[in-house]
Length: 143
Image 1: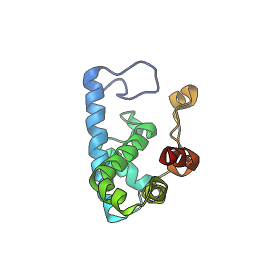
Image 2: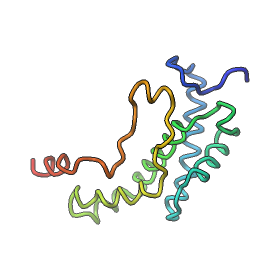
Image 3: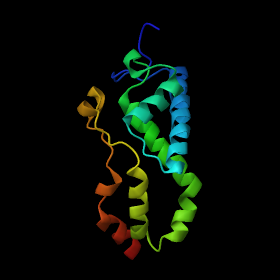
Image 4: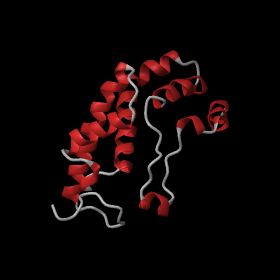
């Protein structure tokens, strides 16, 4: 491979390469899901291992970067919510009551501390769930 599959350029990946990346991200997310289900914290070492297993290479090769690793964490969260979200909603008395449950899930995942040049230049950062304004949720419930 002469060029990294995933780079910090604004040029979109060819559809075949994008499909390969997406497939590897889902594999990593499924591996991380098992950690979330077991109540194990996903630190950067666990995340790196999941990404290396899914991509078959380290981030030093340019095949994946930390932005994509954090995307795998978000995908693992979605997989977790698809599996357990209905039970969580049934247990919660309101959307506000569900927020601590969601925060609990995300507390098992690493914070997005590593940023790519592209994320910095385009100001694309995920908002941690515990920073989500509660007044927005309560406004929706009141409506």
